[in-house]
Amino acid sequence: MRYWMAALLLIPDPGSRIPGSGVRDPGSGQDNPLRVTIEAKRLNPAGKMPVRFMIENATESTVQVDEPADWTTGLEIRDAQDKVVKDFGSAEPKGKVKLEARAFTGRTADIASALAGKTFDEGTFKLTWKHAGAVSKQIEVLLVRDYRVKIETNLGDISIDLLPENAPANVMHFIGLVRKGFYDGKIFHRLIPGFMMQGGNSKKDGRGRYALRVKGEFTQLKHVRGTVAMARYGDPDSAETDFYICFADYPAGDGQYSIIGQITRESDRVLGEAEQVNTDHNPCKGCGKAIDPKKPTEHCGKCHLDRPEIEIVMKKVTLTERKD
Image (cartoon, rainbow, N blue to C red; front, side):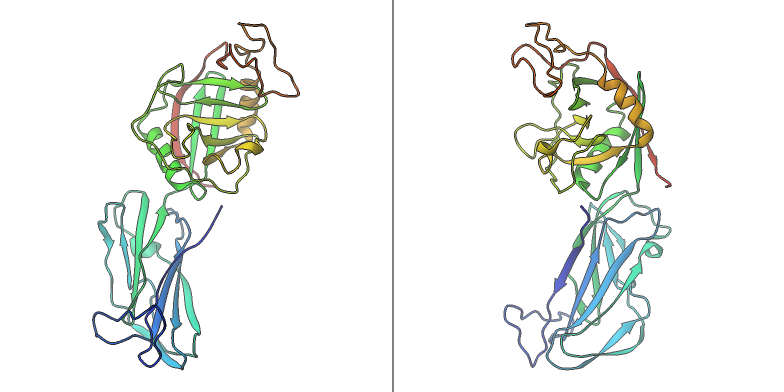
């Protein structure tokens, strides 16, 4: 789910006190008639990075406002470690704009040029904007490129287009694990035809644990065939390294798991081959019960471990930037 993140700071007119405000311009010691706003989606540093800048007349009377020649000049950008990547600057006014009571003016500006030539890691950045003595509240925005993950398996390659705007923290966690080579040599240890296959655990029996857990990011995005999401324990904020790939729609999982990606159309053939791999409950080796084709996620309930009879190995997992 895509959404806008907005930050507002209300600075009232001295002749019109607004309940609950009372914020003053620390530089002048006087009330400021303006309220400034910045809004942004997830930003891709490989292309245009649009940020919406807005100025509001927060009073009940008409005011004259300086319109910036460059809306990005007064923007401060800090990285996840709170290091300043771009300082506040002083914007030269383009001219005056008359704003009626409670009226707005604004511009969507590309901030890519403000970051040109600067070195920074991808992740959550903090943006604050100053203009005409008014200061916006700080907002957090994810800066990350569009990535595709390729899982080279013994059945063929599975490519996943990541969805950082849907589950930013979980996607960044997954990217970090891929970059470290964590998934190389891991297996899909659990497979249920008609449902999903799960892998990425540090142990082949699926009982390995990882020191870091990620907070759940549950949205309205639906589970369909090829959806990739982080597995978790009963705690909604317990995702570690395991992930699963759906063989079919999974409505019961909607809003319950963090969806991080979707496999490419070309990968569907390999996903289909994986779904055909026989498992320890088809039929169950303990009691002989076979899967009911009408209820593929059901099983005998006591003997199975959903283990594929042949190992589906992630020989190599790599990350590439998408150009499409």
